[in-house]
Image (cartoon, rainbow, N blue to C red; front, side, top):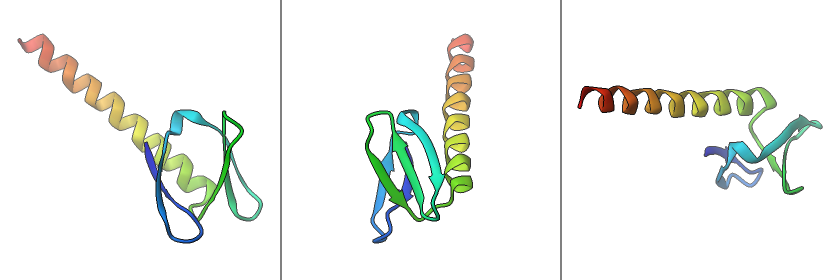
Length: 72
């Protein structure tokens, strides 16, 4: 999950695995696989960076768990 900000400053957690695409029109619109769309304050590049950081964290956590399991 990544945290984004709606235009009214409401914080929202979204499932980044459900993002179909992100566009700037000029507002940033996130389109989901379900067809739902939301407009957020973050730029397209910021959304991309948040997704990358989130996926890195998941991979890192898996590697730590695997290493701990091997030590047992």
